[in-house]
Length: 74
Image (cartoon, rainbow, N blue to C red; front, side):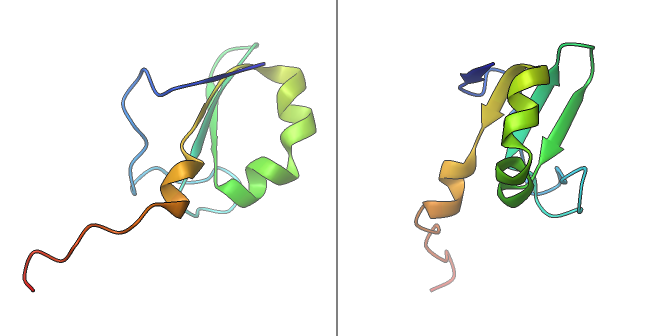
């Protein structure tokens, strides 16, 4: 498995975890075709299995630790 910097469209708040529906921060391309998206929690929970079946992983969990953008109306 390789972890990739987002080369496709970045994940947005509209992208949802296929396990629980929370915001997705990882996109996993599968060897068998298709892709799955996971929140950080479920990506960590299923990390070992994902390593076995993933071709690439786009990991945007760094967004969880970023500083929010300043409010433009203040």
